[in-house]
Image (tube, rainbow, N blue to C red; front, top):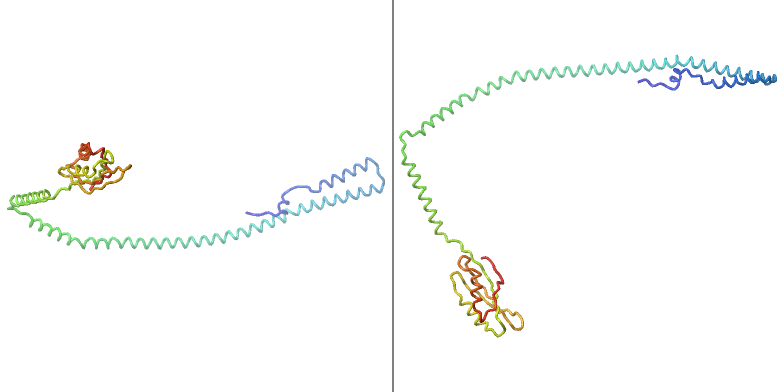
Amino acid sequence: MVNYTATEALSHESVWYEKFRYEDAERHLQEYLAKGSSGASSCSVVAEIMKARDQIKNSLAAVEDLPSSGSAVLSSNLTSRLQQLEEENKDLKKVTDDLRSLVLSLESRVKNLESSKPASQAQVSTAPKPVASEVKATAADDDDDDVDLFGSDDEDEEAERIKQERVAAYAAKKSKKPALIAKSNIILDVKPWDDETDMAEMERRVREIKSDGLLWGTSKLVPLAYGIKKLQISTVVEDDKVSVDWLTETIQEIEDLVQSVDIAAFNKI
C-alpha cells in the first residue's frame, strides 16, 4: 500500500486557495471606479490588484508543478516495492523446492519399508506351522488315552455313597453343637406399702418364686422417702422360658407386702 504525503495529495486537487484575495481586489477596483477616487488612492488600488494577480500566477504555477513531482515519488515507491516482492517470491520458491524434495524422499522411504514388511511377515507366519501340527497331534493322542471303552457305573455309585456319608457326618456334628440360649439380666424395684413392712420377709417371699430358666441374684435396700425403703433385686432369665410380665405379676401377688414392681434395668446377655 502506497502512502501519499500532503504535497502529493494536494497535487491531485484542483483548488484555488487565493481566490478570496482576488475577490477583494476586484471589489476595491469596482468601488474605486464607482466613487472616482484621487490619483494616490488609484495607485494603491492598482498596486494591490497587481500584487493579487502575481500571487495567483505563482499559486497556479506551483499547482502545475506538483503532479510531476508527486508522480515521480510515487513511481519510485512502486519500483522499490516491486523489487521487494520479487525477492520474497524467490525466497518462497526456494522453500517450496526444499519441501518438495523432502516429501519425495519420505515417499521413497515409505515404499521401501512397505516392500520389505510382507517378506518378514511371511517368514514369521511360516515358522510356527509345524509346532501347531505337533500340538494338534499330541492333543489327539491325549484324547484317545482318556477314552475308557470298558467303563462302568461302579465309580459313580462309590462317589455318591461317599457324598452321602459326608453329608450325614456334617448333620450329626451340627446337631451336637449346643444352641445359643438367649438370656436377659433384669433389675427389679419391689416397693412396700409403708415403712413398717418387713423387708426381710418380702425378699424371702420373692426368692421363693421358682421356675426353669430363672436365677435370682444379689439384692439391696434402697431408701425412697419418709423412712420407706424399696427392695432392689437382680435376676437372670432365659427369654424362651421365663416371661418378664409373668415374673412381675407373680411378685405383685404377694399383696400383703408388695405395693408395686418396676423394672429398673433390662439388658440382653
